[in-house]
Amino acid sequence: MRTTQLTGRSALVNVMIAATEKAGRALTRDFGEVEHLQVSRKGLGDFVSTADHRAEKILIQELNKARPGYSFLLEETGVIEGVDPDYCWIVDPLDGTLNFLHGIPQCCVSLGLKKGNEIIAGVIFNPILDELYWTEKGKGAFLNQRRLRVSGRRQLDEALISIGTPYRYQEETDNYVRKLAGKVAGMRRFGSAALDLAYVASGRFEGAFMTHLKAWDIAAGILMVREAGGYVCDIKGKQNMLDSGTILAANDQLFDPLSDLLIG
Image 1 (tube, rainbow, N blue to C red):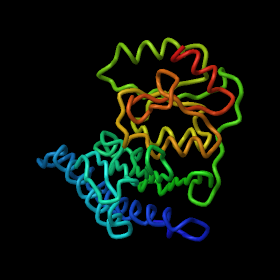
Image 2 (image 1 turned 30 degrees about the vertical axis):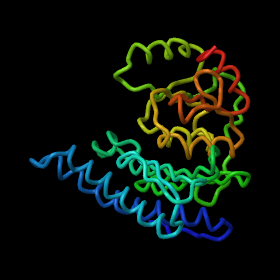
Image 3 (image 1 turned 45 degrees about the vertical axis):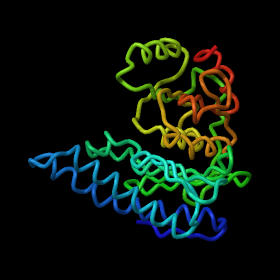
């Protein structure tokens, strides 16, 4: 694994990266066992649940050590109230669980920090591919040491869009796909909301539209897209993504056209 160079980052982001990378190393070890488990009697679901909880425990320990008193909102554990009412870590220890289960390296640790009602920092780390996305409000977004900027494409028919509606809502998914079909260059469904937003920030996708999410899926990615020059809103065109569980993210050129198509 790459040795992270911490120079040029704030102490806060360094804390987040160190905790995320430690959790990521544990996931990498577990990821290497998935292939063996697929031919054994051991329950894959139980194994992934254990990997989830192990990574989450590491994050709680490391973040508490560095910033005692901050609250937590966690996918596995729920809410942990801290003595500092202003700050809250928003944690997904393993986004893309089904990919992880199948040995597909499209999964990550996602960590956001909220101060009051505002997200002020975020880290999204794919430990399998060793891709570290990080951002801090007003300071830009980065992939490892490279500054990120959303795609410069201006035409919908050149755009690659991620659709993130869960499969159990197939009718809803079909509706959004129909709205985009024939108007964009292509659509993808990769199975990790946090990475989809990181891909918008890095210019790999021109846009991403997702529904039925939780705050830990998107907290870090929201700031990532904004700091890379993109725009985000919820399904009503508002800035209530963490509560509504819906998000449209896109580059500055295609945000309005995609908004017109998908949310009216």
